[in-house]
Structures are given as C-alpha cells and as structure tokens.
Length: 261
Image (cartoon, rainbow, N blue to C red; front, side):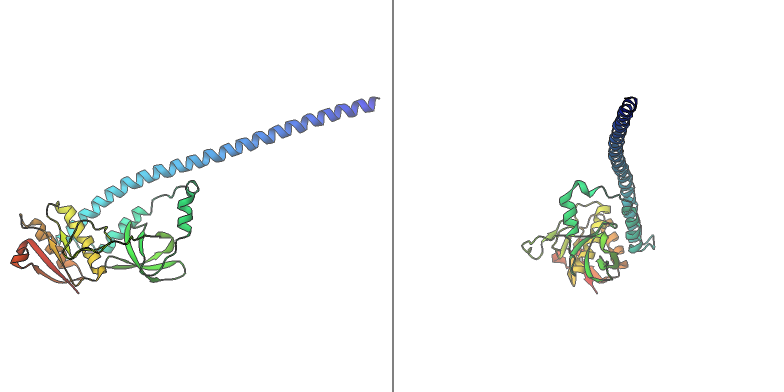
C-alpha cells in the first residue's frame, strides 16, 4: 500500500512537472514569435528612417550635381559627366530595400523580369534611364546611359515597359524628357536657367540615342544668358559636331540648330 501511495505521489509530481514544462515551452514559443515580429518591425522602421535620410541626402546631392553641371557648362569646372553620375549613384545605392513579402505582386513581377538587348531599363543605383546593349557576363549588361556605356549588374536593372504611342508630327515641341518619343525640337522659352540646362543635357543624350543627325533648341532671345549657357554646353559635349543659329525665318539667334557626329 505504501509503495502504491508513493508511486501515485510521484505520478502526480511528474504530471505537474510535465504541465509546467509544457506551459514554459508555450510561453517561450509565444515570446519568441513576439520577438521575431518586433525585430522585423524595428528593422523595417530603421530602413524607413534610413531611406528618409538617404532621400534628404539625395535631394541635396541633386542640387549639388545640378550646380556642378551649371559650372561645367559655363566652363568653370573640368568635372566629367561620368563622375557626376557615379556620385549620384553612390547616394542612390544607400537606399534600403523594404520587405517584399508585404507586396507579393511586386516580388513576383521582379522575379519574372526578362531582359533583352534594346530594352529600356532603369538603373536603380544611378536613378538613370538607359538602353541595354548586350550581355556583359552571366549577371551583367552593358547599358547605354546617355553618351556613356557602363557595365551594370543585372540585379540593379529594372525593365521599363514602353507603351505604344502614335508618332508625333515633325516639329512637335518636346515638353518632357521622359517621353518615349524624342522630338527634333526642344522649346525652353519660359524655363528657368537651371531647369533649362538640365533639360538640354537630357535632351541631347536622348536625341543622340534616337539617331538624329540634327535637332533645334529654341531658347528665345531675352537677355542672352540661356543662349550663352547652351552654347558653352554644346562646345564641351563630345557628341556635338557643330551648331549654329537658326535661319532668320526659323527664329534667328533665338534658336540653335545642333548637328551630331
């Protein structure tokens, strides 16, 4: 009888220990999952904050790069365009990717991306649009960025879908450098000097890629500051063969005709 009583007490004790162990395991598992969620949330918050700082830095760098371009165009600096793009790329590369698990559609689209020569792409680290030329290794492409050719890792490329549009009539004025169609004419009348020079820079690159032999830049007469800035820029652009003012009936010295090499 005593042995049976002792065995029953031990059984009760073991069951108690088992229950406590199960409760402890459950608590540990709950705390672990809670910790994982908190860690993920904290990481996402840190990335968001980091991206805010990067955006602020990028804004300042864009202003600086714009100013450097302005200096370059006025022949006050020998800074090369490639250096400007590279500097901008280093800032953009600081961007932290957020969790794609929260956007399955975006993740799936990114995985299914297929790249081919002549595709329009966005080079994410540089924030620049380019055209694929050819494969440059297992996971890299040679990309035309304006007048520059650069080797870019495939993971840094995002394919741009170009919508079919009706061709514009000859002489249509280009209003946006992001248009998939490049007009033979760029109208800068009414633009501020700094914005106008940035548009000229992008437009010349786009016109070269489009295969134009010549284009016309309408800058107006005004004080002549914009005209002088454009002339200084064209003198230093390696893609430009020569340039001249338009004929009197096409704007005279209020427009400049640019010829490419």
